[in-house]
Image (cartoon, rainbow over all chains, first blue to last red; front, side):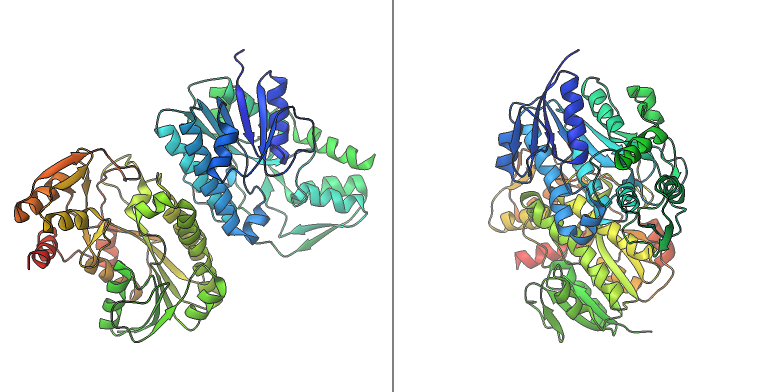
Length: 296
Length: 296
């Protein structure tokens, strides 16, 4: 298999870390690039802010592939600091695209999100569904994706956006619903559901997401955009029931939070057909691993 | 006719000025709101930056209608300073939407652009055409539009985005192609066409655009988005021919500039049907006025 010199932006983040590890496992020469130092072993790392062009150029020069996962990935941070979300996710992605083009990168893979679709007009939602994102996070991610699509249109770089499902796994951020539930459960506190709990998510394991980046890097002739989302839709009440039963805690309901994306059923059929990507970690297995980690 | 207390953001700008004048003419109580002082008579004006929430709140409080034309309207400025474009056009529009909602505004009209469509997938382009903008200007304007659509979805405010054609008229910015041609022609210099000149634009007169804002303000039951674009497509070579003939100067061709939107044929049929909006200023009349102004 052909191997590449890969730069991973956001390499110290939850998904970035798993992407770095997977690419190293596949034999690629990987350099991490992040504002903060990684909390795991990585042979090659550059510390810096990709929204600064000279810094991004210094990090990216010499790479043949860029996996761009950096930015504001926390929907609640984007809600409270939308100016930062646009600086990092929209403007910063333009910088990464410009630098990739100037430095002769041959491939770029961008971490977009299923949330760019907004309220579904039909289900399931495939890649041709219109994008009507409604939150600072998802609007800024779509803006970034448009720069990636423009880069692809330049025909100099094979640029692909992956619209990722709600990611989970070890190291996920504290504000994610699974993290919040597990943290309260571990302390013996009742779980708190914001809204009715009928909202559902297709939780997609970080290792499956890392697998998608790895697959795109080593294959050619991609569509501009792929949904990378696990099949199973899990209502939040079902998630709460599962975790509360394990930890023997109760469940409470509170007011819905602003910035929550609407429920949608996303299909990854295109990724399955064209990339051969299939999620390997079932929700049952993934959540069991997280629960057992907290129980021990 | 019902009159309103209207705040116009970007009131000192090219289009803002004509919108202010038209709304005053229609009997509305108009307050201008801009970073820079107006160069025309206006009874009520607030100086300030709408991206600062408390400043925007101070200006908007008490208004029943917001016409939001403020932001980076110059595609070349957006190209050279995309961070500013996102701050003003994306984040700033979110601030204006949030403040409008909090202060009880009943109607908001947003100045979007035909450039949000990007490369046309079919012609003519109506409002259902996908949006694939490719420049910092058009991507940041689309991001702003998405916040306006979200505001509308809150069902508290009648929010409408007007996708405006390439605007022209007295006071247009110096970087616009008509201004550049007229300025060189006036000095007896040859006109410079960037690219082949076969690219075309539907030049839409500022007074017709001001008329659209006025119409939306005084009617109800709008679609979320209207194209407000004149019918006539004018190739840039034809524009150059027209101006060069009047001033007896030559025409030169240079390299295409980056950030130029692709040519597209935009239809305003929906605005005609639902708003009764029709452009009143023909391109011939509008350009003649500008030429005569320079000849005298």
